[in-house]
Amino acid sequence: MASISDVYAAQRSFFDSGATRSYAFRKAQLKKLKTTLKKHETAILEALQADLAKHPLEAFSSEVGLLFDEIDHTLTNLREWMRPQAVSSPLMHYPSASKIYREPKGLTLLIGPWNYPFQLLINPLIGAIAAGNCAILKPSELAPQTEAIIQKVIKDAFDPAFVAVVTGEGHIVIPEIMQFRFDHIFFTGSIPVGRKILEMAAPHLTPVTLELGGKSPCIVDKGADIKTAAKRIIWGKCWNAGQTCIAPDYILVHESVMSNLIEEMKAAITRFFGEDVSLSKDYPRIINEKRFDQLTSYLQQGTIVAGGQTDRSNKYIAPTILTNVSFDAAIMKDEIFGPILPVIPYNAAEEAIKMIAKNPYPLSLYIFSNSRRTEKTFIDKVAFGGGCINNTLVHFTNADLPFGGIGYSGMGRYHGRSSFDEFTHFKGVMKTATWLDVPVKYPPFKNKLKLAKLLMR
Ligand code: NAD
Image 1 (cartoon, protein in one colour):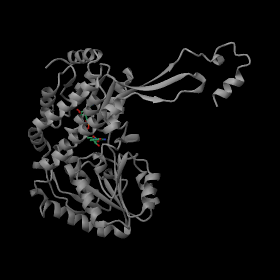
Image 2 (cartoon, rainbow, N blue to C red):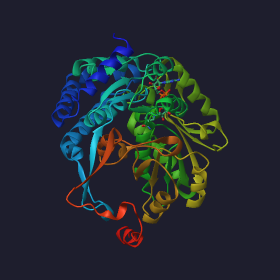
Image 3 (cartoon, rainbow, N blue to C red):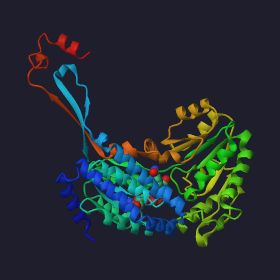
Image 4 (tube, rainbow, N blue to C red):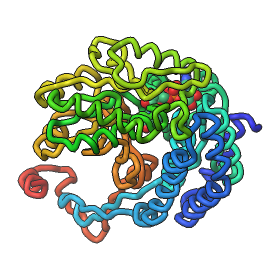
């Protein structure tokens, strides 16, 4: 493998040649990416099965199908997104015309996590390519089979002078790469590492997108359709065995419907995965022993009302519902990131809002309710990245919705137009005609103030 400095130098010179800028080039590369993903689709699904025991349906819909949608959406809109935008100009500088040009930023570094190890690296790549950039990808070393297939796919699709992959342990390889100056860094991962990425980007003043995590609450109001809520919450919590940045982390349920919700969630678990979930092929495993041990330590922090079974030898933790959980316990401070679901009662929206405020702004928020007023109360009064009403996770799948966090859950946003914008420099240019030169701005200023004030009203 070529050294990082060789790859970097090759990309810098390729970008500087202007080759990535045209619409035709970007379109061709996106199409190439799509055909290469199709070609390797089976191997990608196998890698995800090996790393996380993801069922092919789950792996396809959350890691590959979503990318096809994102590429198609981008190809449909790219020409329009790239078009310079005419905007108005101040009267003071008449006769002028102003335009915003969409310029590629340059060399981008994309860093991925292990939980959706394929999609969370390739999805930002679509935005980086669409915006006319080069990219270096760093997959998570904790999903080694997926890391290998990412290398294969990228090598098959692209010249490394345009898109390349570097591998290795993050704490070693990332500081090495980040000695070089990138024009944008896109990081998906944990809050502590996100902080390090910002620190390493600071000397070069490189703009950074941080897609981080946090505790995403799920509110179940008294008038909600409880059966549907239970089904959609369990689906969202068990998708990738809860190892999803936007998984419902904990439930705040109106006390009058708490026992009904718990019964319906238990029924949903059995309906989805059978009496013994460990036998289900549709239920993934925990990524490694370290995470398994962390998750099982939470099981003592409440009363187990469903699940609780674990098997360290195959990193299995049953979908588990906990009650009697204190906000002072670690499980209510850490992002759970596994299939354990604390259920906490409230009796007024204001009380639930105060509970949410005990933790930093969440990445997602879910509200199950049949009341517009309740929806509005939570949307208006709680700061969160994005979310759903009467559903979980699915806001992520809509390319027309910007995706990203706020505060500790991240900065910047992507998907669809937002991805294009995130990787684009907005270059504002004003052009002034020469046939007239309004003298008001030129010294001497004597007797011109009145006119200047008129022009700038
Ligand atoms: P992580 O922060 O440990 O690792 C992410 C990447 O950073 C990996 O590629 C890793 O190699 C690299 N890395 C690790 N240590 C590093 C260091 N010291 N210096 C530089 N780079 C380093 O995160 P993870 O465990 O892979 O992923 C789980 C976290 O990611 C959770 O907090 C989850 O909420 C978050 N996440 C967020 C989103 C989102 O879209 N907002 C999506 C998925 C996961």
